[in-house]
Image (cartoon, rainbow, N blue to C red):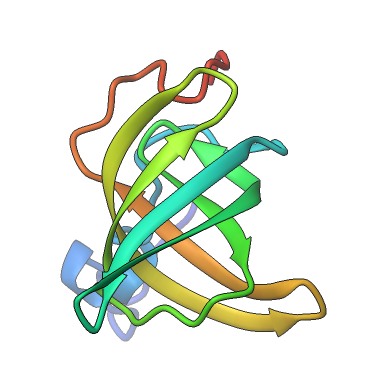
Length: 118
C-alpha cells in the first residue's frame, strides 16, 4: 500500500501534460501497403506512389520523395483495395534516402480501408 505524505502533490489529468493526449485512437501495425498520394501544388495536380511503414484505422506513416507541407490536403489510395480517402499531412519526420517520413491522417475513413485486421 502506498502512503502519500503531505508534501506529495496529487497528480490530476491537467498535471500530466501531453501523456494522455498522445494516446492513439487505434492499434498500430507495421505494414507495407502500396499507396498513391494525389495533391495539388501551385494549381497543378501531382501524384506519387509509395509504401506505408505503419498503419492504423485512422492514419499511417508513409515515405514520399516529394516535399509536402504540414496540413497539406491529399487523396490517399490503397492500391491493393482500390479505395481512396481524403487525407491531410499531420507530421513531417526525418529525411531518409528514399524520401521524407510523413504522418498522414485519414479524414472519416472506413475501418477496413487498409484491408487488414487492426
